[in-house]
Length: 469
Image (cartoon, rainbow, N blue to C red; front, side, top):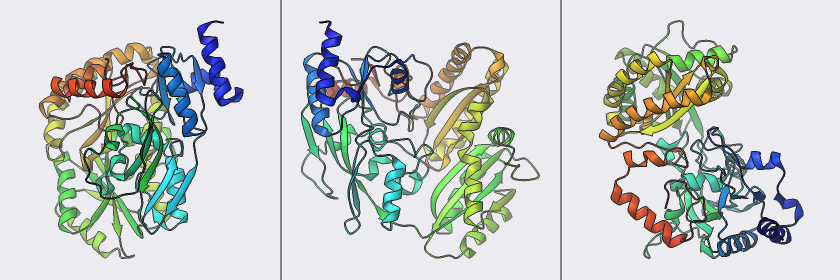
């Protein structure tokens, strides 16, 4: 019997015939994430139902040196869930149970295949709140969120995924199960190993269960979009909100170019103001009571000081959703508009205006190569999404990416001088392995490689992701 056939036979005996997928369509679906730069070429897709099956699969793969790509909702943008070299995809999608919820101790325990939205909804049904919020919440899975340390829309208020994790259950490369899954808030007994797996992109172990923090349900949200003339004014508005004692839960921005594309691709979205402004700020605050006076007083001072030129306030839940639509529809609109290549960089919040000034000449010069730059993102925590776009009729996607990457390298060199990050939230995956040097020193990379060799000496877990061993 051929070796691959032998392996497939073992997997079918372990999981059941229905849960080992080899159909070409399934391989294409499970072998890629939202990136399109790599061909999907896995050998098979494995769908375990529980931790024991994950353990048995990894023990076998370790013994036979079979490469494995852990797979969640595959909503990443760095190629972290791509299987392009004949790997076996280990999908956690069947492990999608909410195990327990404790509203007194404020935690929820789930399997790794539960989606972000499922956790949000279960928390809401029980009168509490799960803080992580993503545009892809209906598809993204908790295991993937943890593996990439997802950031999301409310990081400025609640932190990213790392801040939501109390405990983890992880299966190591050789099949051993590491039980770190407790709801303890304080445990000062040596190294906190769970943090090694958060943001490791599945290279150190496969997360199978997690215990997550819950919060009291916020009672009232208020939001507004402001038309702003300059980036320094964006930062002034955020500073002023603190002086007014407002609790910001989200602070987003997008350029006028992004706004125009959203309105073009979605005709039901009319321009926000009669006059166009270079930048727009979407501000969301939490309030303990339904009182608009503090928010309206703050907005009045913003306009009086000239930090913003105009403002529109959500006066109902429907208007609240409509305002957020201008921000949340950007990614979808860009994809409909033309070729898109993305970055999710970050710099220290106070240095954002200077950084954008420094890369402005690069964007102007690269515009001569038919690349348009669309900026938006979580400006409140220094995370900017730089989108390189071009009309599809202008040439092939591969040719476009070559030009976009050349521009990207120029921007990354500026970013390095600010000690910024080449990936604020999507990770390194396959796409940015050569760019890790811009954000991490050689010493840091060497130590990370040493840690990886300890956990996975045969390099079977997500090989080639983050860096090569």
